[in-house]
Each structure stands twice: as structure tokens, then as C-alpha cells.
Image (cartoon, rainbow, N blue to C red; front, side, top):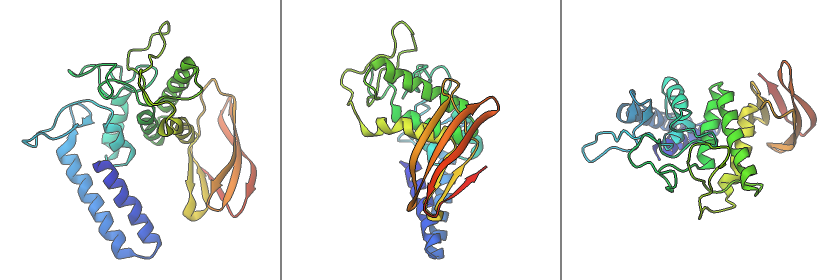
Length: 265
């Protein structure tokens, strides 16, 4: 929750600045900076390379490795050093099962791969992890998550992802284990794949400036090309063709409509 409060402060501060409300923007930016500093002081666990799941009644941190920390990663609440450490920790063997990242580490006392929150895998959680991995120039980690989730959807033969599935270690003979009462289909699970594809391609839409920024795109080794049609940018749109080449990933503009700038980094 503190991660999302931080995201609200920073994003609304940016809007206020664009509207010429400098005093409001400065106040919100200060709130964000204060929250970030206090959170780092009270919640960051250096030894475990994660954030505390909570503070107990004595304000002592609960040292539990859970995917909740990914939300702090995704919202920018952590500094770069902490974010790098957490990104690596989330992809370790006790968290990443091959199909996705668990909600709770297999080393924790309450771990249960069939539990709703204590060991299962949630696709939307995984999209947040992948998004930050890609932004820290770790596209292969994001691609591993994409691979696992797509293969999960293929095993389930539904063409989409459920709300969650069980967190058993990957076994090719068994495949991913369905969670019996998971919602299916579900909007944030359906959006997970699109979000991961966007971040591994390094695509950022800046509506205020009618700009599309493409930074360090990457492609899975099993995907040769991808076509993106009518991507909305402000009141315009862009269509792209993405290809995997021997030199890396290339993106070409097929069509551009409206006053849209495309910037490659």
C-alpha cells in the first residue's frame, strides 16, 4: 500500500507540474521523498534482500520473503541498489518455479503451494516483477517469466491465464497445477502478458508529449517477429513490426497517424 501511495504522490506531482501548479508539485514530491526514506529505514531487510512483509506490534520487521515486495519494486519506492537486490532475489529458486514467481518463498514456515496467498503463483504479480526487471536492463529475467506464463496457458489449453495456479516446482511430466477455484478468466491476469511484452520491447507511451519511446528492445529466442497495430499515443496511433535478428531486436514503423513522435534509444 505504501508503494502505491508513493506512486500517487510522484505521478500527481508530475501532473501538477505540467499544469503550472509548482507549489502543489513540490509539496507532493516532498511527501514522496519523506515516505521513501522512512520506508527504507523501517522496512528494508539488507540480509534478506527484500522488504519486511509488515511491522509487528513492537514495530519490528516481519522477515518474510513474499511477492508483495514486487509491488514496492514496481512503484519505484525502493532505491536502485535495493531494487536490483530484490529483483535478483525474486528470481531465486525458492521463489521462481519455472512457471512463475510464487507469492511466498518455499523456505517460509507458512509455505504451501496450494495456498491462495502462501505459495501459489499469480500472473499479475509476475507482470509487475517482469516490468521492473526489464527497466533495470534485465530483459532475460522478464523473458523467463513470459516464457513460464505462456507455457502455463498452453498447458491449461484455455488460451488465457487464470487468477492464480499452484506453486509446485516445475515438473515437465506434471505441468503447472491448476488452482481448483481460481477465477478464469480475470482481467488483470489477461493483461499480464501484454504488460510483459510491452516492457521487454522497451515501449513507453508518453501521452502528454504525444511520444512513443522505444528503449533497448529484446525478444525471446523462440519468437521471430511480432506485429503491433494501432498503438494509441495521445490522439494518434502507431503500428510497429518487431523482428529478432542475429544482431538483436529491430523495430520498424509500419504506419503513423496523427502528431506522434517516435524516439529510439
